[in-house]
Amino acid sequence: DKDHSVILYFSKTAYVVYDPNKGSFNNTTAQTEYSITQSLPLSQSEAPQNNNKEFVGWRVFSDGNRDNDQGVFIPANHQISYDQNNSQFEIIYSGSNTLYVPAEKSTILFVAEYRNILSVQSCYVGVDNKLIHNDPAGGTVTIKLEDETPSDSGVGIYAGQSYTVTAAPKPGYEFKGWYYTFDSENDQQNQTVYVISETNKTYSGIYAFNENVTIHAQFVEIAVAPILNVIAEDDTTAKTLEDNGIVSTDENYTQGYGGSEYGNTIATSFHITRQFANTTTMPGGVWTIYLPVNGTFMKVPNSDDKSIYNYVDFSKDIVKDSANSGKSNFGNIYDMNSSDNARTEMFKVYVGGHNNLTLTNATVNFGIVIDNVYAPKATAGFKVETSKPDDVSELGETNSIYTHYKDGDYVHNEGKLNGGGGQ
Image 1: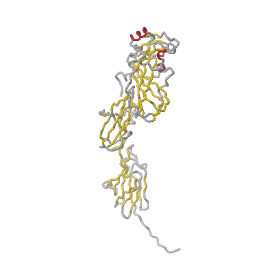
Image 2: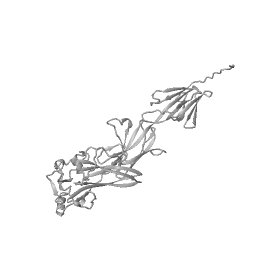
Image 3: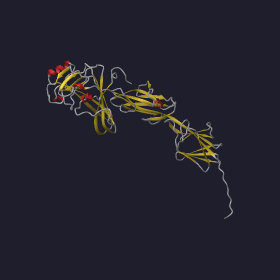
Image 4: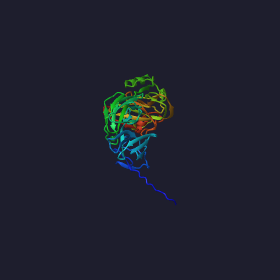
């Protein structure tokens, strides 16, 4: 109800352009333009994506001209205002940091900058020669750029940057070498593996690629030899066994498999150490055991159905167990040599456990006894598991591997340990 004046204020429109630089920003791979005025700042928080590369920041160019590089990386979370009076942009980022960018044409260009990811991972090779990627059972690996903290997973890296990778095998394993793969090939069935000729535990290189790469450190389990336990019933039996290559001794007798309670007891046992740090939950582990048929002898209880023993020559009984006939493993010892000498049987035996071990740089001894089997040429390895594998059975009450043998719980790997195949 009074006279008054209306004054119109005009603010020049300024433009902010985001270039995802072969990536994707706000669900588009094209440049995105936003208009702002002096009274309406623009806030952003989304980081562009580019094939799992590491987003470093937005490189800032004045007036949309790529020659006017401001030399500053702006993070994903930032706010932009436009000062019309001074023809400049004001960018607030990382809390209180502010960048002023003069812009005569009232335009500013943000171009996404990325670094490739150079990852590292440990690979485990057991005594079965099977390679398992990204499994730290055999050791650890770290990568380090100059003046940066080592990482056990990966780092962002530019082409031309130097890096150093370091492998640390655990007790019972040895470092075998380095190789690398391109992440772009990870989903391909026939992925190419590139071998690095350097075999030292520490390797330095210069990054020369424009895509993500993973360097693998290969740790191979050192196979353990068997400890043989043979207890003959009497001197005559001991001589018969010795004539057939079975030396009677109880010097390495291990409690728990029957021992001298039985006549003509034979057993092959293995012991191995593994190192742990801090608190380790150990539900159990898997013994992988190779039994070469050539030179292996097996005691078959009389109560068993002999037809289920496919690789025992029952025409060649080495010695009979004439004592303790009432015991469950009373039977004869047979020679397996007359079957296919080129065959090597692999058994995986799961040993259940439920212990929470609180350890600091401790070494723990694991052992297993294979009752009723004498295999001086056998090799074995033990791998601690975080959960029970699906492809192995519980160890039976007999504590004997022949139970799994007759039930078919084994895998044939012809050639793996006979000069063929392998990684």
